[in-house]
Length: 505
Image (tube, rainbow, N blue to C red; front, side):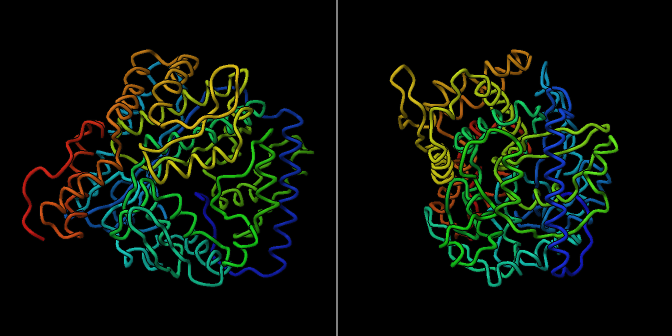
């Protein structure tokens, strides 16, 4: 959804024209695949992180326009709400000391952005859901002043035809309604991109789906929303419910939500783009002047603008991406599973684990997705969101007997998946020092059963025990999180609790 769109009204012919154009785009994609026009393997990865603007009191600050003016860098851009920013890191080739370089770039970018935000009495906090957000913060008047967000909100609201219902039953239960998609802005995430050839796309996507639950288990960082303690990773249910175009009747009929894990393993990238057209009506029926088939007939490379735009309004946790670089088309798997934070080291460790693991799993002779039902991968994802580092997973049994077994996520990671990730990173040509440092962070989280979500929850409860009110405890937890985030030591080393007694609140 990074493309600029112009707000306006749509009529019936717009939607029919857009549907026809989408079909032509899909045919164009099919031809590009058949003609093998895609980029050769380049081992390229990319990363985006969504961020929060927070005051010294730990409360959100609605200042992204002013902060972006001061940052004045193309690497930073708006996100959905005025307390959100996004930083984009240029593509890197996997290999060597890539993760150390990535960490240094991130530290430099975030420190610069934090200094600029500080000129406006704000700071940068990298966290899955800001614990101090209130329902009054997540209203349409706080959406960023950008046409595409206004238009997207209007179209999703119109498609739904009634208030959005948020109902998340975790440690505590949250039930409320919203008149806009603004609650989605609470969800700040890390997006990991991997450029792949069409021949490898399905294997990489299937591998990414298979490990989505494991990623959440070790990386959960979003236990609070609107003053309630919910799931260890509350972003997925919040994101699904706050973008859900289906009234209850369509949900009861089994109509798929736009925020979607999926329902099957795939054999081609084409499968996902085709499903997006078949299952999901257009939200933004904006037509480009280009005819993709005429461009192909002339030997050119079509932008497939309508397909790209439509694809950006279907929120898969592993999304297919079509792009063009230097006049050559390419495909990427965009992994959208992880929350932002806690520290740069944690983000890079999560990335190293992911890139190593998907490579190793994609190259196995008997891939995990041939030995495990897709429904088990989806159930693993839900379990990890609920229970985080303490989740239990269904995974293929090792040995000749086959079948699946239920196992602690931390045992699965330490005993089976970290060695695979190590093999995968070696396959990418990552140097042992990088590999050992960042996979060591994942191993220590498992050993201590500690991640961002467990630290937030434990520190919040310590604050309550010290006599703080809920709101004061959440604010104090957020301030302490921000301090430790900027110090930069990985979250498994963070001391639980507040650094000193805080006056009663």
